[in-house]
Image 1 (tube, rainbow, N blue to C red):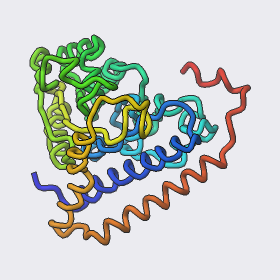
Image 2: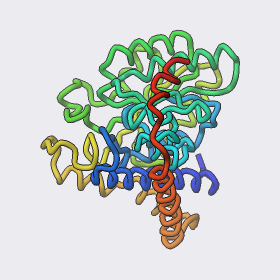
Image 3: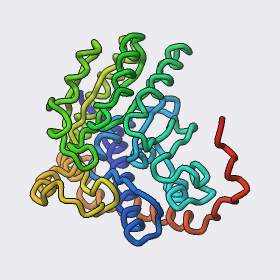
Image 4: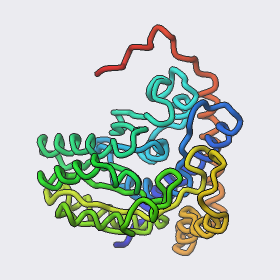
Length: 321
């Protein structure tokens, strides 16, 4: 399919917004300004951006512990997301969700989740509601290769296929379940092979290529909204930072050479080269886009740092719907 310039620019901006936010968040975590664990999305931007470019706020998503990338890609505000990471009252969850449990109903973000594999069953519920209400929306659940081993994923896949729900399963296969290489926790090479057991299409796509992701998502979403049921889209990707934070816990589980090879396929560099070749965005214009987004991110950080901490008296508010 041929993408018009508006779509290409939209995907590019989403990727740059994720990369800039996550890079600056990593610096803040290293400086001790963000408490708790921080799971960064750097390297995987093509996946969220290629898929979110199809979605509106009326389409639902569930996310993982690596969730700020998804929220930013879906149109989240830098200031409110940073405020959440800082534990401030102006955050998306009023400082109570932190990094791993970000959610916002206005964006259609049902929540990130620190429990591996917890998102798919929630997305099944959202997809069921879409079918019940007979709207032309879709639900998307993001999860990793490790989560595809969980019973919650298989139960969700079975039910979604059985009821032909408008749901897209997106496996962001970055090659590692925390610190365990895929080959050491699965006998299969492609998670997409598991789709056949539930009678749904399973598609493997280059998760470092935003256009490839966009095109694969287009076909899967068209199938879902036509009433033909779910699809499993496996995006082969890679995280450039460690499982947690920038340098993680100092565990040796992947080589510098492996990281360097994947960094040669940086999704943003690949995409910007394509945009330059097509005459959509020059190298100089791309630099300006990065600079403008960085200015927005820095303003978001200032907003978060100047925001108040939550009042302890509100501790039990918003706990139940």
